[in-house]
Image (cartoon, rainbow, N blue to C red):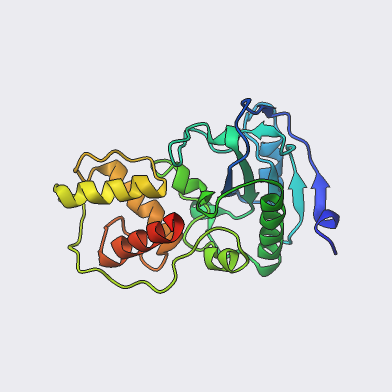
Length: 247
């Protein structure tokens, strides 16, 4: 079965024109966070909901197309990445059916992930999207969102050339940073997160936004420990990823 054989047309009225002069440069992955695929598809195509995505992928691997990639879907909300704040305007959004943390978060089935990887590669073949711009909803909206969460298999995508994943990381000898921290080290950490792409101010205080960014980063790149504390491993992975993407 080819990718096109898996596509089911379910158009959504929730869309508008992309901003002129801004090409598609981001790929944003979400989970639906609803009890069933039908509920999710119904909501994403409901004009009163005023939300949408370009695609939804159910757990069997079926792909529902809601919005043409030439148009702006309404999936990211208030968000930012690498200084861009109209993420809807510059991204393709893919919703992945999963109940999420509210309704029984679970692993993503193999058939679903096969379609996710195939669709992502298909999208990347049509648009110039840097690896570092293939990100989670929680990356672009860390104070609001958790999806697709720590169970999402980012390494499997990176093995197929979708996104970036840390390789062998040498741990730095750095102190743990957390909510009680306030120092030049915190400011350095915030600047590194800015450099990688996150929307956080470099003011030197480990505030709630900084903690949310650390948590989002861990959900994506250090899912074995998601606690919002910038320990040596978290800081080392961040430094390593910056070296990878800026090389």
